Length: 403
Image 1: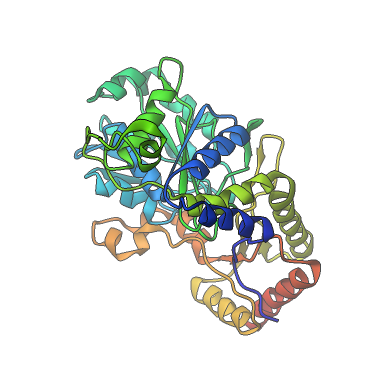
Image 2 (image 1 turned 120 degrees about the vertical axis):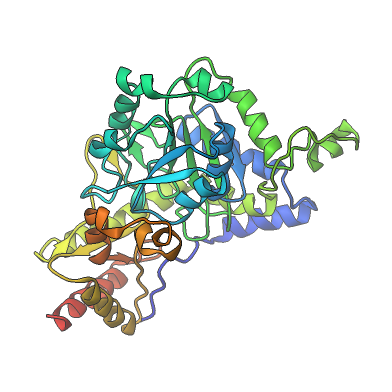
């Protein structure tokens, strides 16, 4: 049996929405993007959402909006995909790594010792769709001693008056934290709509704005949209609506806009995300939990609590009592059965670009331990019980082959 790792959810509704876009003759940024932004805002309950061409772009735009630059520091987890760090580096700032806790996420209990006078942003990452401890992070950055060390250098920093929380929620659209949809725990939350995500636009992202009272989220939305289109005062859609051809460039912006032909995919998926796609992912997740619970060597991923509910983006299984080499052997055995699996993630200090900059894996022992024992299993609506059982048997067989 051949079981792919993470195929996109493409049904007839998605195809019809894309064909509608193609038939309209309008395929770049336009009404579909605006509709997707509105729907994300409705489902998350945040005041404004701006779409862009990737979550990476969204994170970089928001760091730029906050004035992050050379000499600044941004605290991120050591256990994450490289893009979390690269957006910081692109602005000339320094990523400061924090080890993870037993749930894969940033260990907020260690946060204070990483904060310096140069810290401008904390960027938690919801690994596998499991929300970070945002209340604890918010409490720490609002402590008088921590706030007194904050040195604002821009008007936005002056107005916020503290370290900004920017959630890398690439995995966690639809997750629940403290009774709210993801999007409320941070000042900004960025979702990914990459091809393997729960909701996809092939490539894309969404920036959710949740700044405190005193900020004009509507104006910030307009600013981010303008910056994502080269700083141009009129987009192509505006020109077709009687706005005239003449435009101005008022900011040295970027080219990070999302096109309508991509937004159409996400729009059709998001309409049925809460009623079909997310519940089906939860079903697969829970079936894995039930089947693996009987094995002492199976270290299950975090499961829903009263305060947190996952988006079930990954089933990040850890194997107790094995080495990194044995994990890789297990993956080879599983793959040989036709089941495609993955690993999420290689901690940043294992990668050349970070190792060459002096980051040491030995400084982040929990991140390494989680990585060395982790195997990500397929999780998506099309997996029925027969396929799930086949996957579990492949993992069990692989474990016994190395013992």
